[in-house]
Length: 389
Ligand code: NAP
Image 1 (cartoon, rainbow, N blue to C red):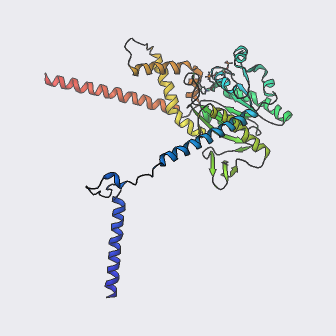
Image 2 (cartoon, rainbow, N blue to C red):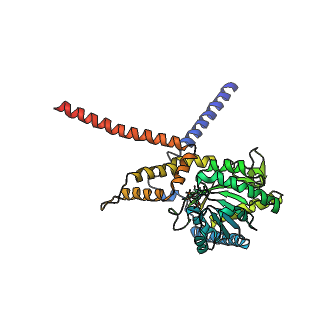
Image 3 (spheres, helix red, strand yellow):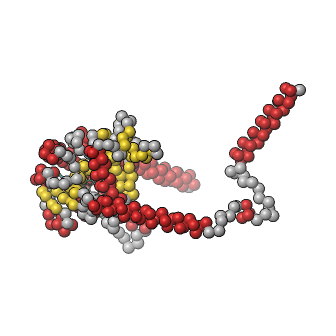
């Protein structure tokens, strides 16, 4: 009897369990039936009167708090403005120099003489032939290297000697930032050649003088904090927030470092990086922390393909017509913007991103596939017409 009862209890529990699972599983797809006489709206619990009003007030309070924090950030940034040196004062160097000048002191240097252009922007200019004087400038916080991708390695090589002298004489190295459109190449060279004392920030503003001629608002800025105070950071971990430990940086051995670690060099290094990044933030950029490796994987299939298509279409000599479609206008725009950049830049995108050759192969395959489909269809039609005769 006991055995029957136990199995009865077991079976009924089992059925109950099944029923519960079925209800849970099925309910998202079959919501509980509403009595057809009942008003459907009455099944939703109405929000108490005035709730929206309260939420709006809360929203207004938060945005005013956000505005205050931004204001404080800006005054901290302006209280001790950075001195930023730019090596390579060409098309892109001038473009960023103009905005940097709103936030700090800017010194440009390049092969060509840009003294007049720099003066109009409120930027001090020094010839690249006197790189030593540029590097030894007092208060130089940051050096941004904005030369062509193809001349990057030689430029860094030349810079190293002067940085070593500065470290010996002044005991510090400015933060070294690159803005190259290919990132693994830049990262490897900086890590290989720069003295250990130099902090490194690898960046790529995903915009330029054409695409952002009306401002940087909403433009994407990719960066990797590569090395701070001699610690090589794990770019895949980036800069994380841990609720127990605060802001953390992971090194390549998997050791975590507090963003506010107790060494003056570390604190100063972090502060300098944050100040520099804040300029881009203040200009409204969409800030993306990403490893150089991931960046290059993405850009081979986006930026490089865009430039390649722009160059191929540009080589066709396409011209505007009186009856352009919107699509064709976009094609002409693509040709205009990609061809405005130097061929050195295009070559650099190809040569120094290991994924670009594969992108070209895939493009050729797709071209063959699409043309093949057209020829196949044409052949089938001709066969069909012949068979009808
Ligand atoms: P670029 O043709 O890639 O570079 C021109 C700059 O490189 C000029 O400042 C030029 O100096 C310098 N340069 C060229 N050969 C040199 C050499 N042998 N030694 C020293 N300096 C040399 O054109 P860019 O558009 O100005 O780009 C500069 C950098 O910014 C590149 O690394 C590029 O990837 C990056 N970037 C460009 C864009 C963009 O939209 N254009 C966007 C993001 C990042 P002189 O003018 O004095 O000859």
